[in-house]
Image 1 (cartoon, rainbow over the protein chains, first blue to last red):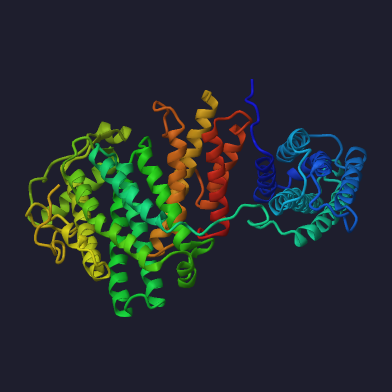
Image 2 (image 1 turned 45 degrees about the horizontal axis):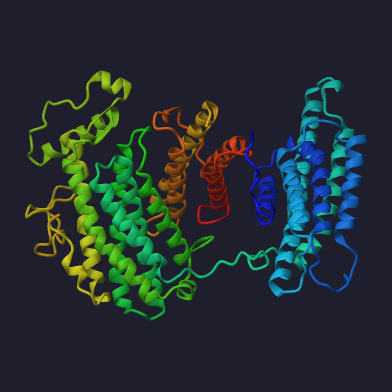
Length: 489
Length: 113
């Protein structure tokens, strides 16, 4: 037995609007006739809902009711659909779902909303939003149908031209009459769309009209998201992580470095920090981003198709992404300095991001330990064979001959691409890349330390237990251990 | 979820992973401050969410989806989800469809273009 539909009127209208947008996202010419057949139920159910919605004001309406006209057009289309073109056949499921949603909304309003009166400003805004949604759904749906019909007619015309050229039998060609019928129907949908467009222009479907207000992010959101991420990354790394977890950690840390650079530049433009410092800091942050991305890519190569990231880590990553979007992004990319300054306190955001970069040093050290020692790490045999061989050759160039003449995966394992434990040379490559990350994070934290009056930047950053830290090239990295010694995990 | 739905969601995971791979390649090629990272991370999150819907024993391996357009792969994933998001489907599945639809929108109109 299907579960009861528990959506509210607002949710039903929002779903209908989203479905109508879907018709534009996914247009195929063959859908045109099916959409025409399903259009009448949509208009009829919209009209029924419109009739039971309370008026926006208690005053008498100043002009004719648009819905009466739209309903008339819809009935005309229904008559043509049944009698002439496209005739009986399948109906578009998305439009039928919209019709069903609108009827369900009508039932709910009839049952529970009869006594609603437009007395308060909030109630009036709510009713106006519902009406705007209904017309907007019809407007977008009519446009989507018109687009599909135009494609359908063009498709038929191309097909007919091709058939004439190839001298196919007349009976197998599309009929010119059908093209004309489709174009006639298209013009009727365009009229419908234009009528609805007038209402949409006068009642734009904006966030405030819909009561969907997107407040500026609370000042603590970014900080909370970054703190939660830091804690979760530590937890995941401490509990036998898999390659997908290391990929996710690398990618999120790279994003944090990018966002830190963007916000630092914004702070520089708004004269919150010294322009010379901006250049130094963003340079080190960019280097850190590149290092984390390289590490994530390498871990990604070692991920098997069946690998899954820790769900808690994924949730924390999603929250970081959402907080970054709300703070420093627009629909088309990074926000401008003015936009970022309008949303958040730049100094506070910068401090949160800087603290996160300091925490990144610690995360990088843990990732290094995992790469070097975790006994449960596995990877697909083909990638291991390739990577381990490459690393063994690099080791030989540096005078290490311990791997000479050894194979890392048997022919059978390679043939089946079996998931096998990570051998020493593959680990060595990961460790070298992580050393690069540690060095770049240390430099970024040290360069940005003057921005942060607390001394947290100086108390973090454990150094590799006294051993020399080497980068992917195997050389000693200057700046890899700028602090003499930190707390060892 | 029945066996058919599990198979479909596994297909969605493969499509999303391929889309994420392409998005990360684009992000890495665009340099250190590429805003493509946000879209790519969003696709990763959706792929994780989809794989969490599957039972642990479900196999995720299979042919790599054909195509080198992130937005088109996302649209295919959304289309697959539409088939199984019927009335009464699990809330998390419905939520995943909304998430993927938003990513389609983002890939077509936003930072992903």
